View 1 (cartoon, rainbow, N blue to C red):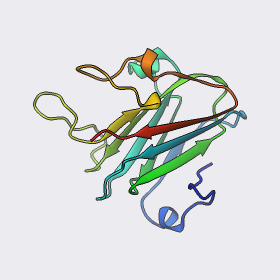
View 2: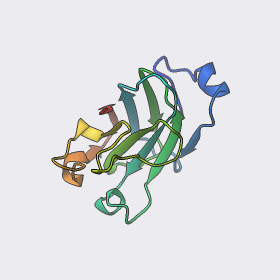
View 3: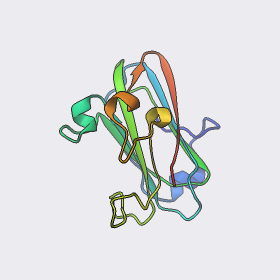
Length: 147
């Protein structure tokens, strides 16, 4: 289920860009992901919900994913589709629509990104232990994009 912060699906979202959401069947625990610090200029926000270290490392597919229009200053998505368990969230603002996190020659991201728990890495992305959280009941993950 997609809801805006007001609880309604915004008309702008419904009529603008294609929204792709791949959520499994409903289970009852509610996960809300709020992405803030989205800059003006469009693009799309790509969200992955990862249910294991292997998924975080790219060895398994994400448990759920969504692609939403990047609407400044932030967006929100809520789902009841995940069973209780341990998860992590990875977010990127794909400003140019190429489906990848663009980096400079040194490998530093050129596009905004963020992780659950607002985890930060040292000389690279954070590890699974910094990103993971328990989904039991209702959980809100506020993720501030790094620019």
